[in-house]
Image 1 (cartoon, rainbow, N blue to C red):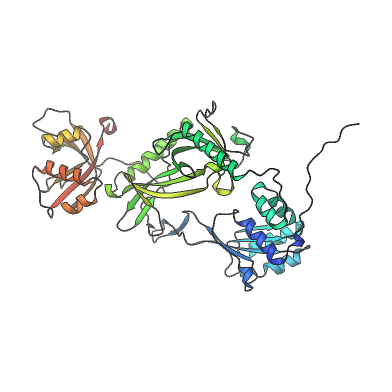
Image 2: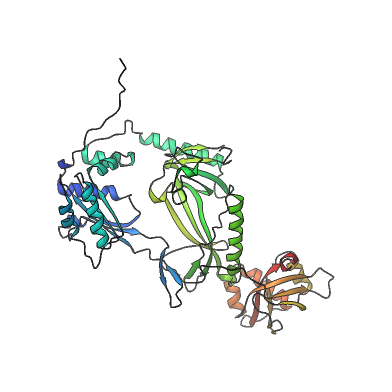
Length: 493
């Protein structure tokens, strides 16, 4: 006789033991990490809920857009607004198609929510699911979910919801709870291993492969149809430590930033976070895109040229294993984390605008305008001057040769003929040197004191102006400014 195999089974959860308000509390607890919410309101508790128990606002990313008068998309950030979700809880044993229609009738067709969740302690039939979908589509609801008894039990059986299960029903499915001291020791052990593996402080730039603890198909991406949208492993650049975890570069984009007007824009065309392991064809495509976007970004005023950076934090407490060796596919450290929801391995992210070494937190005070187009085309050189030249004195020419000079200054208008994108030679008749072309990227006039105040290195700028003019000018004097970049001979050919 074959020995029977012992399996673990769980009895049914008795939702009927909860009063209606506690059932509402249970549903509210379950939705907290279902989406990234701006706020959750327990409207049913007030008694004046318009038929809904919970009202929630989902955080929105930088994808809210509108069209300007030229039919061009303008992306706006509305951090205090979000998609409205309505949540209804019904502690009832049976809910049929007719009852579902009655419940959904509370939704205002003229002003429907973006999302809707109906959670009940009943088991729904196929007809009930069909009626639920059909009625909500008619009312214009974009996302909707019907959670029955089976779905609620599945959620409560998840390890992450063990606290909720214990709070409401006095049941814990976790066989062994780690003590606080054990958790702290585990976190410290992970932190110290990361210090040894990727580096300490903010002095490192190290690729790591972040892997989902639940994944069993690595390294075969094709096993997941949604891998691109929801990767189970991905290379990130670890660059610094936070008291709670490891900072990683997630995205970096070309950006326009005006600190005075509090305006900004960025191009999502190319991600500037370069990863170690990239397909060669894919890498070439990225380089081509980068050159196209750079062709626009290069000709912005230097004071407005910046980057939009998204950095994310992996908490030490969420890291289960650190493999400091990696493998033949990804020959750098692997970090195993339990991916949860849309954030995956990350506990949170921050969005930063950077100009040089200056970092600016992207807040609601900054308005996004339309600087970068959706489509980029290969840029062409402007007029190439072969006879006319930029004449630099010996000191300025020495700075140029040492790559310490990137702007030409004059007060007499002798280079007024130059325009952005045009090329001209750098020359000095007193010195026998190889001639080099520069391309004008931006041209403008300003008072000397105003221009110096707006530069990243005021003392260096003042010195360069005095060196090129051969004198110490008045602070209120107006100066002509030509920002440029160097052009190699092979680029012209």
